[in-house]
Image 1 (tube, one colour):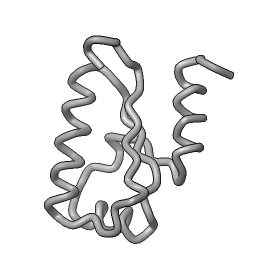
Image 2 (cartoon, helix red, strand yellow):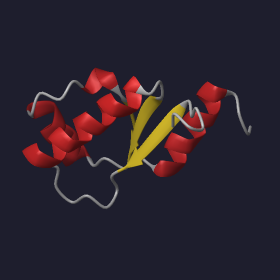
Image 3 (cartoon, helix red, strand yellow):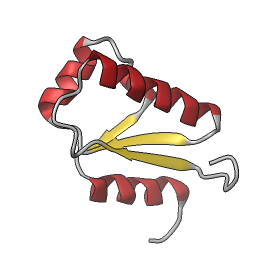
Length: 85
């Protein structure tokens, strides 16, 4: 991101069956690092169960945008950056 100055980073967790404390911690650390580089984070593919787990673990969900599918995440990224309509 710092080399290309990306405005958005999409993290797709579709293939993650369970987000436990360790996974949530790594995810949050990654989100913080991306934001420090100046990009907005969009999490895609998070299941309702995993979203509930993340919330219960105290991860500040207001720190990132979540979209149900990668397609929805890409559309949102294009919408907020004004690219590729």
